[in-house]
Every structure is written in C-alpha cells, then in structure tokens.
Length: 419
Image (cartoon, rainbow, N blue to C red; front, side, top):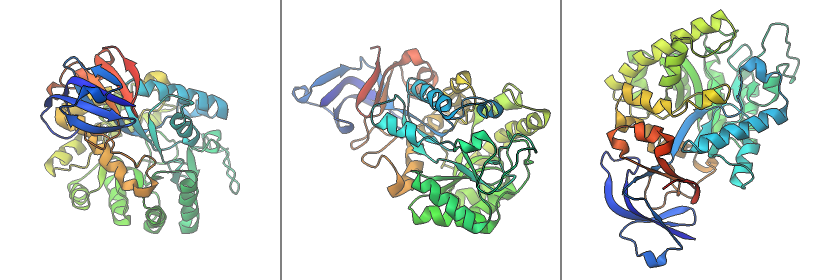
C-alpha cells in the first residue's frame, strides 16, 4: 500500500526550519521518499492543504498502568488495571503520541495487543517492573503492617508487576534478567528517595554502587541500558559512576553533577508541567509528608533547568510522569508548553520527537521496533506522523490543540483525519 501526502511542509524533528512544498511517499509503514513524488504510484493521496507534517509525539516517561492513586490501585484486580490501561493508551494515541516508553508497569500484554491490532495505542517500549531495594521507591507497601515474606509482595500494586524489590548483587541481577525475559526494552531502577512514596525520605541513597553496577552489567549484557528514578546530586553521582545512562527527573542538580552528565552523555528526562502542579499542591497525595517532598521536588526542577542551560546539556527527552486518573493523563500535552517556557520552542519539539528516538536507540537489539527510525520525518523512518494546521516552529500551541492535529498516523495507518 502506497500513500502520498501532498501540499505539505515538513518539520523533520531536528532542523529549526521547515522543508517547504514537498510530498511524502509512504510504502506500507515506512517513509520511503520526500520530495517531488509521481502521484501515479499512489494507492491513496492525502492532501495536507498546506499543513505541516511532523513526527508523531513521543513520551519517554509514562506510567500507563498507574491509573489511580497508589492506595486505590491496591484495591483493583488485574482485569480492571488492564482495561483502564487500554483506555489511557487509546487516549494517548488520539492526543498525537505515537510512541511511549513506560518506566514502571506490567505493559507487555498491552504492547502486544496494540502491535497485533487488538487494542489502540502508541508503540510501547516497556521497562516492566521498576526495581528498588527494600524500603526503596519501589517498596510500595502502604503501611508498616504489610509484611514481605520471601518472594511474596504484600502490596497488591507490587503483585501487579509495576514494582519489584531486590537486595544485593545476586537479587538485582536476577530481577533485571527477569524483566528482560518479560520483554523489557530497557531497565528501570530506583536510585534514590521518592516524592510520592511514604517510607523513603527524598535524600536517601538507594542501592549501593555494587548493586547499581550489577543492574548496569545485566542490562548491558543484553545490549540495553539502565534508567534511574533519581532526585539528589549525591544519588546522581553514584549512578553516573555505576554507568546509568538515563536520569529520570534529575531534580536537585549541582554544578558538579551537571558537568558529569554533559561529559558522559547521560540523558535527562525532566517533567516541568508535573513539577509545577506538585509545587502548587494541585495533585492529590495521601499525606502531608508526601506533599512536603513533592513541593521540594517541584521547586528544584526549575533550578536544575538553569544548570542544563549553563552546561549546554543536549541529551534531553520529553517525559510527563503522569500518574492517576484519566484527567491527569489528559494533561500530557501541557508539558510541551512547560518546556517551551523553560527553554524554547525548538527544544520542546526536539525533546518530544527526535531526541526520544535517539534515546531509544540505546536499547540496540532489545528495541522492539528496529525496522525504522522513530521521532523523525526522513526516508527510512516509520510513518508515525501528525499533520498540523500551522507551523510548530512558531510555537507549540498548534501542536497542543487537538483540533489542529488534522491527521494522526501511526505505522502508516490513519487513526484521525479531519482535513
């Protein structure tokens, strides 16, 4: 099946200028030519009417299975979690997100169902369970009366496969290998305290250097990398030494670790819109302690942005970190405006497209979608794209407005067309 998009300009995901007045040839699920296309080859012609073709949006930090506050998830069956996850996934696609990286959730079944046409949603690069030490950010027991005995996880949310506890080198190696067996594209660990969890103070260092190195070694042996939930500079220093290559949040940065991040090429995935909400106590949380921790995180995130600018850190990827009901996930597009306000328009657009594609390439042969490029409009890329009424380079408002997302295409299939 060959489709040709005509009368279009192109934001390719990288350059700060549009490619003007071109056509795009799509064969099955790949972009095969950009330029002056002979329409006689087309089975279908899509007239963009002067709109802008850009890559489908990518979110590198989602939690599709976490569709409620954690104490509420603890009351849900697997079936309820799965149904809610499928609904959130479909709504993400219809907001223009064609690929996501899930960094704590048992998403393999949903991913497989989407890939095989039994559910609607973006491509998913799963991490499966996020791994932490006992009394770490993945130890989501809701009170001190919940005990763990052997491999038994007394928190239902932990039983659902979003979180995993492992202590010591041997257990960490086993836990990482289990996630790889389950289909993880990359590994997620918790390298320090959490804002949303009750029993691990934000400043705790979680995992020894040897335990972190064990996670990195096991992931590296399978051609992929470790992403770490991480807030404090001391935790980041340890993780950098261990070889962790993706810092999720990287909130309380200092000059020393900012320099290290730049020198080592470590990726940073901040969440500015969510940070602004939690700094203003606009996200419901279970107790005063978590409110205090999240306020600190929310306010620190913007100071770290100044260090990112100072040291010209380029490995930045778009991540929303939305957790909760559908209305929380529905704020996903607001992160574009938050990044634009914090940095500029082109940074926001690159972070949500080509930068994520580059980050995902670190999964090498664990990458579940190796046939084409993600996050770019180039020959050989997947036909994951949006047609926007307007020029995104003039401001992200036109991308955030779903009424101006005239076409949503993923894998060569059109899921929305209001041209």
